[in-house]
Image 1: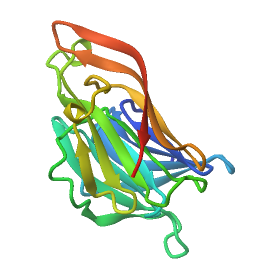
Image 2 (image 1 turned 135 degrees about the vertical axis):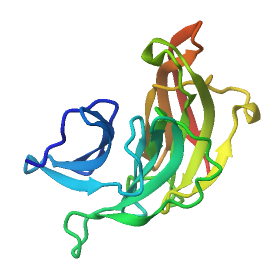
Image 3 (image 1 turned 180 degrees about the vertical axis):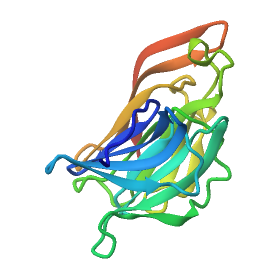
Image 4 (image 1 turned 180 degrees about the horizontal axis):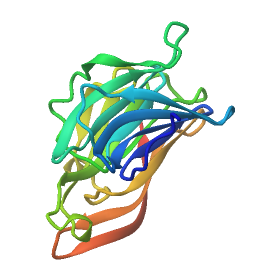
Length: 226
């Protein structure tokens, strides 16, 4: 049976008709494995472990259409992290795909974090071919109270190269007038169309500190113009 073991704190995304599940926390500890579910044939495939990464929860799992790959970036490994590894999707030579033998380059200047909002633009009707992947905010300092508290959070917008996953730019909130407050444990998604361009939507999240943790209900749209 190649289905994933019991877990929480994992990440799942879709690519075409396939679903991919990475990492999280299982009965044996933090995990670094990747599984695929084929929604057409209703079958699971175990795609192996990210052998260069520690097991982690709250990672970013992002599809890069231009690079024909998935990337895992950052996550909580006992501390916040900023490393990453690429999984090259299936080809005629590698039916299941394969993990790259080197870490993603250019992430040294990314502040370590987890439980971020992440997305990419990969639809054929996108307004431009200059594709990027995005990471917004996240937890950068975990709370000693765990889920009962609130640690330190970011609200920067990270732009990653749409082919390699390398860090392209970090946009700080101070550079913009209208901007979401710092947060983690949030979620969002991207939309790209030929007429309206590319946008990142995000809703809610956790902010504040251990004395005053606050759950948010705000809704934001960030238009991406390259």
